[in-house]
Image 1 (tube, rainbow, N blue to C red):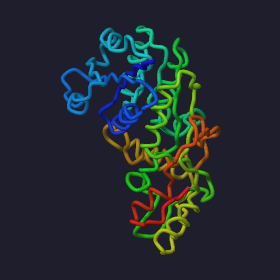
Image 2: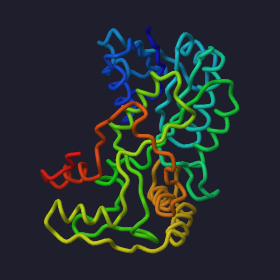
Image 3: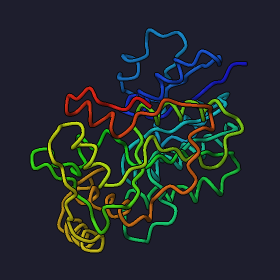
Image 4: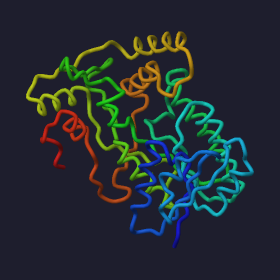
Length: 307
């Protein structure tokens, strides 16, 4: 049986990974329909030579065109990235189109820690997802959100928790707070499995690894042979206040400014966004990429995980 997947955001970082996983699946007959904006050539460049991929164009402000793009699809998967104009406005248009076209299922662009119980005002990007989730829940369509904690890849990039030069691992409030991490590739793999699973529940929670700051410091010491230590950086309350000040004084509306990163750490180290119902075996045994694996690659160590 052929499954037609309409993928929004396919030319983005995570979207490319999701499309790769969908097309890699050899157990299902997948037809991938890539949604792109009029005038954009990125999707054609990426997928133009693959006869399993159809590139369709529609503006997110044109619901009738979006509806035609979605017609005949079995599931709409959103991998768009941005702030309110994208996460709320564009996705609402995509959701409206999916319902109008009679698409049975919808996967919103969540791919984050658990935003459902965070305090109001504590995390802009999470609250945008929660706002859109209310629209999803009110729509006559079966939806599945994938929650995965923080992208593990950020530990060696945009999330300065590990201070490699100073041999410190930052933490706020508690070095023993459990933190959920999943790599982008592993998230993409699960999203593809969800897209092809007509019985997927409302929320699928996965975590490629669950560690503490103390455990990360120990791992870095083992990988490098140097003494990495946990470094208290303040309380989550202090960090939240600092993020609020930075937000008020910042210009523009970037997707991931410095203060948003601070808010993310507040949500994680407070435990507010911790995953509570992780089900890594829903689609059978998986080889998850661990925090140790990612840090081993960063440090050039061959002592990564063997699990």
